[in-house]
Amino acid sequence: MLQSLIRHPRRILMTTDAVGGVWRYSLDLARALAAEGNSVVLAGLGPEPSRAQADEARAFAALEWLTTPPDWMARDEKDLDRLPVELQALVSAHAIDLMHLNAPAQAAGLELRCPIVAMSHSCVMTWLHAVRGDVVAGDWAWHRERNRAGFDRADAVIAPSQSHAAALQACYGPIARLSVVHNGAGPCPAGEGRDGFVFAAARWWDEGKNAGTLDKAAAIAPWPVYAAGPLDGPNGQRASLANCCGLGPVGHDEVRRLMARAGMFVSPSIYEPFGLAALEAAMSGTPLVLADIPTYREIWDGAALFFEARDADQLADCVARLAEDGELRRQFGSLAADRGRRFSLPVQAGATSEIYDLAAVAAAGR
Image 1 (cartoon, one colour):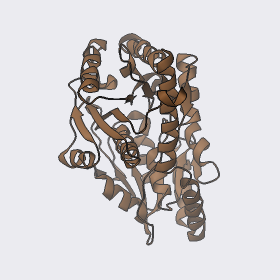
Image 2 (tube, one colour):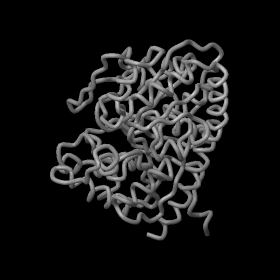
Image 3 (cartoon, one colour):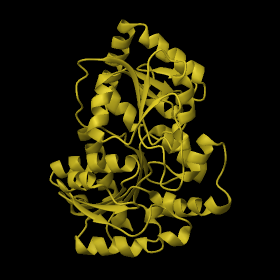
């Protein structure tokens, strides 16, 4: 009976967006799932991808783009009203077996027979709590209700770390069928030659990425700090860098090459449900200097140097300690690489497939 509920290979509809880390997560996971024989349709929300992004996606998946914005770009809840109709049309057009939503709010209001899996990469409530110490209120309050409805509607819910799973339940209450599947990363360039610079990569317009602390530390650090990523956000957000060498938006392949060349990688983030950039740097054997936040402690404790997230002097001290000691850099590079090997794409895809099986059983029970 159980085997009749679980279909392999599957036709999977996966939502994504081209602005944040969800795009890289979606592409990496979709590629790994396709390699196992599954068919994947990527359904994008928000600003359309660049031609290079679209070409990369179409190499292993079908690509569709919707008119609905992602929830974090919506002006109000009404902007999301047409999403169920758009998703249901794609399910019919592509004979979808399972839906993988990369935001729980997208599950609210869906009337589908196929299993629904909701992945929480981040959300307004946990972001506000971590970055500002606030709770959702006023114009943002609908996010809580929409996400709660999505958690309740989904046949399975995934968080990318135990820390984010705990934050979700602290903000939303108990979440049924919640599992943790750590993100993975694909092959990376080997760090054969190292240069004397610090590298960081993030969407710096996001207050949670903590550009200000990085920039203050760059003013007193012994090595130059190169910061890749946009300073301007889609909703008018803006960050400024006076002491870092801002590289602006950089293609993913170039980011990986810079990680492999850098003497160390720094992430000052206050809010990271997982932190894919740190993993990608680690897989090149690049020493990690990370903000001391729950997620980074969970994943990298014992394999990175840590500093208090808002303390630029501590960050600069960590940079100086590594810059002055080549053997210490080699030790921490090796520790990071060893830890990073635990988080491969095949492991992630296998664990996600197991969640899909559980979701199929739960959907049948519906």
